[in-house]
Length: 568
Image (cartoon, rainbow, N blue to C red; front, side):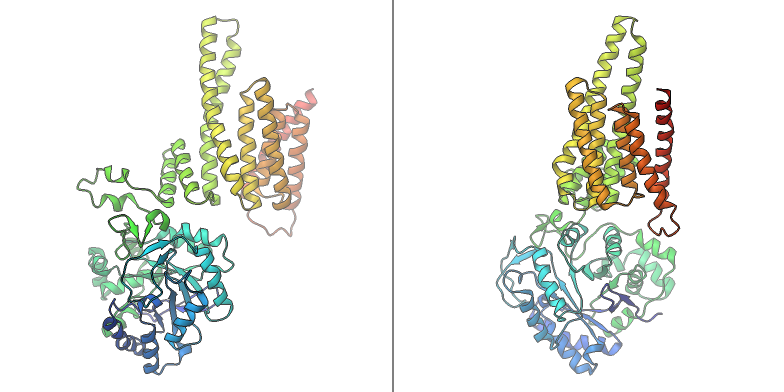
């Protein structure tokens, strides 16, 4: 058995990995019982109590700490801003109320309890009447108030609860302070692996509520088997799994023995951790959608909570019957998952369709990996069509003077390919011009999208004639110049996106303008600049693996085009 470890937050503070959940029921009588079992937990060695204004137990936390005789500074207190206060009270006012109930001048962690705002009276937590959703203030606006109490020292750290990747990304567009913690429902049946990976990258510690998954998870045959192997309780196995993943937990227990068990955890074998990971089925046991598909007034899409096919199909009589899925509105993460599956299956039109859903669900913001997935999908489709077009074009030229019927048939096939290629190129250009480029935030994004726009106008110019050729050529040139302007101001000469732009811009001058001299000038300038940086002994930037690949392509084109110039 091991003692309770600590997890370091992005504030530098060390938070106990195992704490005591402070929810104690819905009636005043149930809540008043909390002092007794919170006291036994503190006497057993707990260093963290997780409560909330909405739990109605803050005053009982104060009483338990007082009776324990443990100095306040030795106990970590987490509480939460309730979902009905934004718009009714300032964050400072709501926290002041909580601090008065807790009998302390500060809390160690203050969480925004939910992303949505519930419209109910500014009454005690016992309110149990009707409620509705309010559209304002947004959680971005409320977070600004959270940042103020953090700056004032009234909350030593601030975080969120029940936030998905989608809503975290929205929050971070305006946040000056990155949340230190995100508290969510998490257990082996709801492993939240994508959310965990995202929070790890952002430096946000995940805290699990409902961490043992009630009896539903604790009675799972695998959990029972492992409990027998380690000679511990099923709950201890699950909590040890959380801590091994770097997830803090706040199990609620009023039983003194279980309280002691919960802070005495085994170290699980890595293979057993993998076996528990395999239980994930995206099944929510605590905050599940109601009969209307809503979670406290918000749709699953608004929550950003994915609906995996596995969890949908669990409730059908026939596991091969996918009809239940057809009526489900997929979340951003579902669509991204399907895009990756389609990519593996080489169904690139499906990749694009799913990524358009991702773009729509995320205010046109894509991660680097998602941008690359979109770019590769369009590239694979157009590469196939461009190859077909070149083949027919070559055959058509060789067939001149042959049977007129054969030449005519080739022309029909060539025009069909041109139409298909033009359709996919225009689709890419429309997406870029109307949505992605206007929404681009960083210089690298703008370079990436403007370069991509230049590429697809270039492909259109390749298959067009006369006025259309001139029009598409001019649009391609304009896009490449725009990308170059952004690249020179924001990206290093060795950056793969900047070098890739130089390569494609040079190809534009060679293939469309038919100027190998200008193509060589652009390619050589980019090549020389990158070599100067890459060969500098003091260079300490990112890996140059991708850069070296593009440099080789530039070198090859320079040799080829230089030969053309000397021949002329």
